[in-house]
Image 1 (cartoon, rainbow over the protein chains, first blue to last red):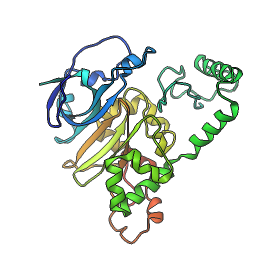
Image 2 (cartoon, rainbow over the protein chains, first blue to last red):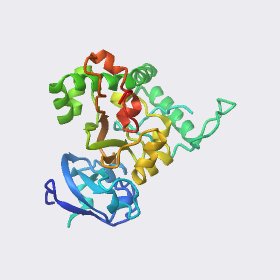
Image 3 (cartoon, chains in turn cyan, brown):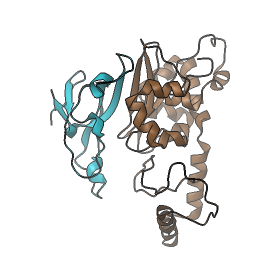
Image 4 (spheres, rainbow over the protein chains, first blue to last red):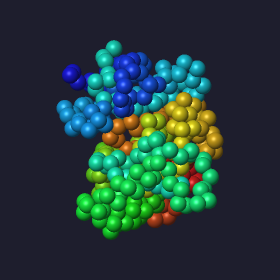
Length: 93
Length: 221
């Protein structure tokens, strides 16, 4: 899978598979920006069902503007949310 | 409500939601009444001891170690960062490495330290469960694990901060960190003005648990 460099605009997959998914629903389908790559980690979705979590998946920090997550957001215009998302949940915009 | 011994096969420093007790359940008058998951946990613990996988002594030592880490541990780390620029740089670059100076390590997780500045105020949450930097702050406060905080702080962080008595100016970016994976977050608060003459030991007294979660500021901050 292609690497996402910091600054890349990405969209989170808007999928709803069954299982132990560590991509919260409130970011699915939303657009944000890659801020850093943390490295590769065992996949929690397969670890959760007793498998080895391999191959490891790249884990990224993705930054969202709060206004892009919540259309009626009432906080500051610059407010953001950073969240850790595995590569297979991200698509380049 | 007691903490349950964790018996996952990897170092999961969070609780899952399915413990089967209401967040505000009153204390049980009869301590012998256990929930389904408490019974399951006790049965597993007894089996592991019976089969010689772990000993009761090891369990007790682990609980003692867990209890030995408190917010005062985190305060020492922050006070050192406030007074030692080289240490602060290491802490921000690789938190897990830097806390080794205090005899600490992150086990199977990684420590990401996020710095408050005049432009950015950080606050941490785990919306999916209760991931928390236990290896530097000890056990999380009960509100951190409850759904109200977890759901609201990502949705209306400034309203939640205001309920903690924390008002962040509108021109400062409030940045929420939702720890969904292998990273654990610690907020490095800003050193309050007027503390230039204080030693690291004196500064430790200003650094509260909540200021390292990001829902408040240090005393005098």
